Length: 86
Image 1 (cartoon, rainbow, N blue to C red):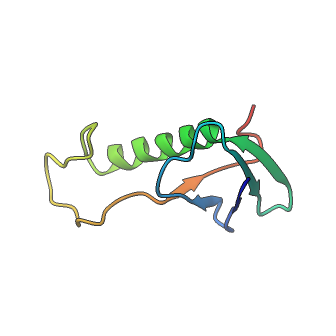
Image 2: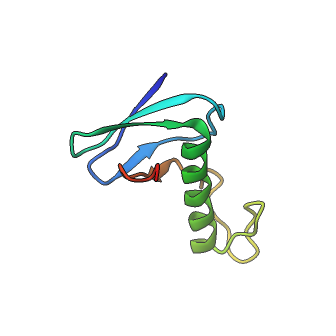
């Protein structure tokens, strides 16, 4: 089981996908915990990546067609909530 903790801003730190069948326990900042599959947490990561790309005018592969972004511009903060499993 992989254990992650939500920070006070509502995010977990995640830089890659987890195995789809992995059990991931998230401790939320309100004191509750939840157990999710890797597939569900990966969807939250993919959604956060899509929002990041849209805000920075990136295409589907993450390439900028307008301005230059720093080489290390990537997402690692994924918003989560206790009801995301529903």
